[in-house]
Length: 374
Ligand SMILES: C[S@@+](CC[C@H](N)C(=O)[O-])C[C@H]1O[C@@H](n2cnc3c(N)ncnc32)[C@H](O)[C@@H]1O
Image 1: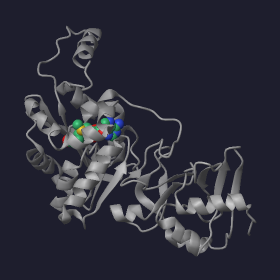
Image 2 (image 1 turned 120 degrees about the horizontal axis):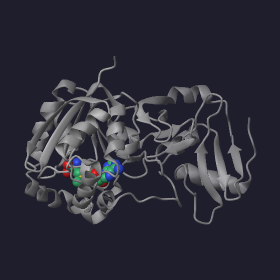
Image 3 (image 1 turned 180 degrees about the horizontal axis):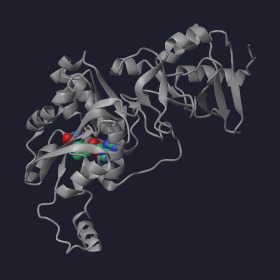
């Protein structure tokens, strides 16, 4: 079937084919977004590098929404769906952050930055496309939003700044020595001990910052794939820069995914190992984050995280409100200090078992496993 397009829409469409999905094609254009269209068999996804090739080789269906909220389906040729089926593979791990259904993928398979950059992802049920526009694949709920945005807590927002992201590994991280953090090399070795049972699997370094542990995990050769994930766009850009500066990392399976730890875009029970270095105290909701970590871990999958603990136990005289008030004062800064017992309880609450920890002063490394299915 072929529809004749108006010349304006044609201009919009070709512009969009050369730019990206879900973006206005030019400032003066009335075209607002292109939403992947799920035809009877095929799903059209257009993206930066890959889509012009697909669009030139064969036509595919997609919606153009205009500012007048008119949605027009442009179908130049729908006879190529069987060929498209061959190219459209459902990624095993990557999920829609809205509905958690697996994302469809058009492009090469694999969890490497290169393969992801050459792919387009979409959620068939939410009709939303996700593209690797920057150096990372953005799988946050608000990806592509132009108007509505949200800022999180100061403890999380500070790391989105380009300056803080730049100085983080160039000095900021060393300041954790005051709390007896052993330093990245030693922390990496300690984490690796906990991850031994899941060697060979897929590891996500959530809240990876500038990727100081991501690089070490990838270089170890102990994992099939390493996914560097953070909410901060600028931290991910730093991660990418550090990776590019190290030739030994060029051929390794490292993917960069922007994600909120409290809404992880990964399939339930799909991940072997999750690392969260110096991050729990920055998360807006550690409980939501730990629940997500537990959800995406495979049964027996291992979580390792480090954070700060309160130097002295909180004396609450057995009264919950007193405890809450004391913790409120201690945590009035942007960083959240935990009690050891809280961390253990949090893991248990979220279905993580075999809790273990290493403590030095205010530094703590915790580890727990996703309970096996009964
Ligand atoms: C102190 S840095 C830790 C970086 C690194 N893992 C390390 O060990 O040094 C904390 C990181 O948590 C990230 N973060 C804060 N809130 C987050 C969220 N909701 N989802 C994912 N990452 C988040 C920040 O962007 C920041 O990169």
